Image (cartoon, rainbow, N blue to C red; front, side, top):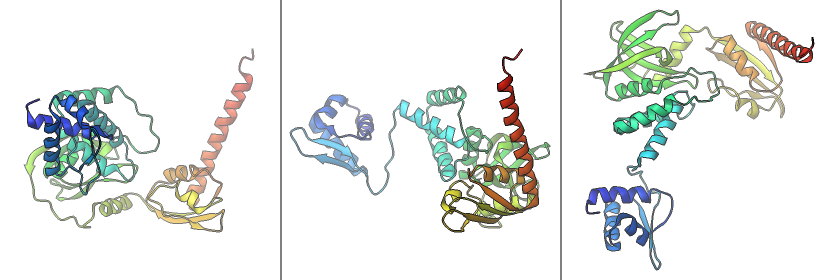
Length: 331
């Protein structure tokens, strides 16, 4: 192999596999001499790749952790696998890694050759994810278009469906994407309405970057997450929660959504949650029930009523199922 840049990329791809490569094996793989391999290793080190050499009859090389992450080199199969995984994760709000996943997906899809983008899209279309949670599914393409416009920065056009079903066209200056753990929101300055807005990404259709650059404005709150919280609190009346759980505080906290504070311990086996939540009574009731522990709701009365109705429906469903099973096959 006489093409030095191509040979270095292939060598780097081999070294990024977590194993030690004997110098002779690398030379055979690349059809060059061991001396050429040694020179290429020195070139990679000069570029910042921490390649470690070991002594021995044949000698060996491996890529180790350094102070900074150098560029990765992926073959076709690896690139497709990573893109599919990121797209699947980006389609659902995964708390803690959501923003980084979208940034990584945006960067990767910008450099994927068209043949690999087609493979990723085909595999994604043929796959149905089995996911848990109550967040709305998001088209990863929508997220990547928006993330690219935020990074640009470029003005963004899209269709938007409001909560009452009204369809509108929007032209915005996108500021940030924010995930609440259940949903994605776009914080943007609405050009036509001359004001800041939050948009639920699952209600966005056909977004595209216009190519028109802009100088980002200063967000009133200074923090996009805080802006989304305030926007949600204005739309949704606050619910004052007061619930006692017959389980340790650590157990309950691990099963509650991140938007709620940790409950206060009442001994080793009980705890109490008091919080103000800008969420619907129905959603709060379901999340409390999913803690999988005995509990008592002290406030609000609306939540007590909802859980009573839900319990009755579940009991009837279980009773009807049992009755149907007992009478199955009866003439």
